[in-house]
Image (cartoon, rainbow, N blue to C red; front, top):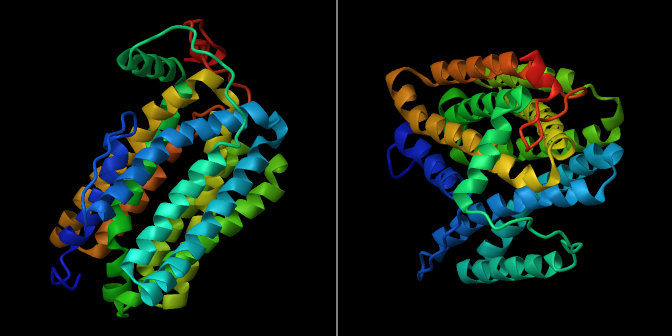
Length: 346
């Protein structure tokens, strides 16, 4: 903001560049190195690796966790991740301010290495590939698998709407602080902290009540709550109320993430989780990139208030495909092309 005189377009493009690697490398990874540019490479590598590790982690959960415990396991994992999102910036800022940027980079390197060491203790994958197939063939297999399932297609639409909605407002949080509330830019860290705390608590609550949740109800209620809290953030002129809206919205997001992750683990064949994830995830990331690309332009042409209204409206629209996802009685179409119960309904 300081360098661009508060240009919404410039600020929103930061999010575009942040998520572009996740979109581009959601299936194929490439890595290059440089000198001080290693700062960018570290972010790029993290984005790439996450796209390879996410399907693998879902596969490990499916293989080693009993069906009735999957939702609790996912909720606990998400809470742990949220805790690190809160603690990480605090520790990172301390290391940087006390010991400097080089120390920070060495710590980052050690954390990557330590993570790799921990991964060697995971259960070994004893399964073997049935046949050697090309990358394009496996991608096509994932698309066909999703195409035969009405619920997965509807889930893809939900992902697209939520990603587009989030992309529109994520880069503009700084303007919510400076323009709407009239506060210093540094207050943005408290808004981020409230969101992280919401994800942490939301995951904990979901883990405690996972067996009593109706997935359809949770998904729809979560989407509505996200839309309401989005509007609450832009309508609020009180800092603590804005924090509260962000906090509640993150709790809702935690429940939505857990419901969708549970669905992916329990309803999709183990050997296809990665391919399905590689088909649906780019919809979310691509939509977020699209939203972030348009956010600054729309704000320049209209106002911050209008951008938030559009975001909330798109979030509400995701209810339509969300209502058509069958969480309980559906059997996902088999990869051999046999018709499933939901295909008959279609």
